[in-house]
Length: 563
Ligand SMILES: Nc1nc2c(c(=O)[nH]1)N[C@H]1C(S)=C(S)[C@@H](COP(=O)(O)O)O[C@H]1N2
Ligand SMILES: [Mo]
Image (cartoon, protein in one colour):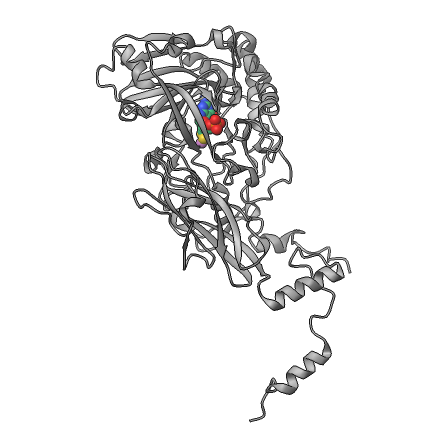
């Protein structure tokens, strides 16, 4: 029978009512005597004020390449007027809204999200920005492994699939995750230089030959794990939606972490060459050459690190990654590596360092990468309510098996994963639980990769599991300071969806073949050619003969008793 034409229900009414389509729910306004429904915003057609845009001027002139041999680099920070012009262009038209990837279905595609409005912003500003999205994608295809999971095509954000995250303790370059806020500037090595200015005694410029001159700067060679503060964000999203900007809140799984050997020099020595800091300088502002768009403003990628970190020789200017020149996508020809801090401070395509008094006001530092208390969210958060994230806390993740996977085993489940701690702390012990975090087994030391001050440890373990059916496998790490992880996602959930440091939990369906009944049932499945998965697929054969059934009831008390 056709549904009644009189209904005011939507076809997906049941799903919406069950909270399976949260973005479609009206907000309830209960501030008055009656509850008022505030329906979700409906975005109108895109508009464009052609005349206003034309009046800004010729983009080819306004937004031209800043330097010869630096394709895709437009300097914004030195030219407030140029920023104002880009702002005018961007505010004279409308763009599609941010895609709903938290309270709506995630597409089954790779790239998962295309980054439509980011591409449009680049095209709208024009000039040197025009080719940036296409050029960047070319380098993704050229430099990254074909199996990378492209979370966002542009700006490119991609991570290796779980089976490859920890397949080696040192991540091969093509498999190292990539996190970009804009395009990939294509800078020629011989044309590259950087400025060191601001509050230093003698501001100077350096090219690569200067920095590679071992008589001036001793080499540093370090094995380093870099972790994005968004790693494992999908667990927070799955529990509760939060801030939903596609780039700042890219929906990472456990692969936004990687380990490489970097060669370079200590930034401290370069500052010394400039005669040291003066006039109360306490922070170093680091500039990356690409363009980032935030709130209709064009800017370069700028963050800062404290002098105390630089002074400890924990900020490296690196040109080599795993024995090769830095790949273009990882910051060629020179990037910063900040040991033990979130990835965001390790600026790629570095072109300027400025000594300053206070942490930079640049939005990536002052308005993003903030860790809020749970009482703070969309309708009340202020940047100063958040902790600016620097050192990463201790964390870990299970790479195998996968959440919701069925595992046939002989009494123990083979698990693999990583563990990491920031700030120069390292994993001392990794523990696994097969009962949701009540009892814990330690991964034997010989099953952990080598211990280093600034790196993760990968691990493998046969986790004893006697029970059948759904089990919750949990992993946690203790670092050398005996810090460990909160046990639930909720305990550390935050509006910006950063630093998912809770113990990693997965649900696995245990099929324990060391038990006689399960073993004989599995043999029967095999004889009958009945597939094992998915577990929800009903089986078509009898699991007990009528003879066995009747024998049971003859030998036991009946189901119901009379008195
Ligand atoms: N210039 C520049 N540097 C950058 C970024 C960026 O978008 N632009 N992203 C940062 C972030 S958030 C992370 S996690 C790391 C990722 O480094 P990778 O792409 O080499 O893995 O780079 C950092 N450095
Ligand atoms: Mo990051």
